[in-house]
Length: 109
Length: 119
Image (cartoon, rainbow over all chains, first blue to last red; front, side, top):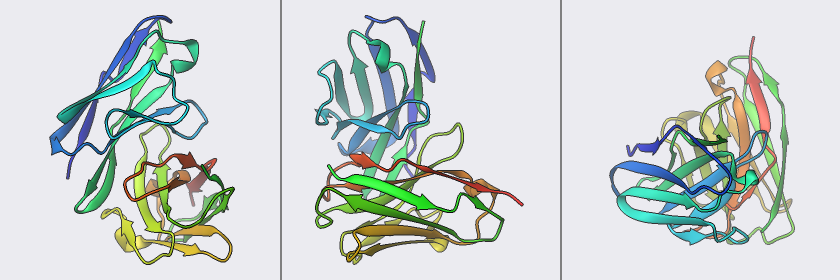
């Protein structure tokens, strides 16, 4: 079973800063890596899929990168509405399984 | 994107069966994969399983497989989750989601249903 480890657990930054969130897989994986944003009391919102493709309507300040075991979500010029919890998710095909990381909480400094 | 609305019992006793329904609006029921994901309080999400639009292809989380059934009702544009023999560990917010293609991520989510298991 592949384990996703997100770091840091909490990241405190100010509006206008750049956030770099990490997601590391316990073994090399294909590019089916997805990033979600979740605000309190809301369902997760799709941000990035296939490691680096932005979902429809997602601002360009959100970008994803990485391959193999190391993936990164970068949020440039943080806006107040960006402070939330971010989860990475991996899909494997054999067996079909979706695994989430434990999340990174992005909070206002 | 489709719109999803879900409902079901929110309070269960241990050993009872969890039953949730998700209705699909505003889009085609075909060519989608319909999934259920849950999130225990204060924790990250956990994938429960998914089914294709016809119900012929389904996948379940191995840790839950023995207790879970996901099915579709194409006549009503709905899909459902049943989980038997619930315990307190099954207390979570349950979400239905849709994936518009075999390689697509979940891009539409229901509003979530808090299911509490308590005696």
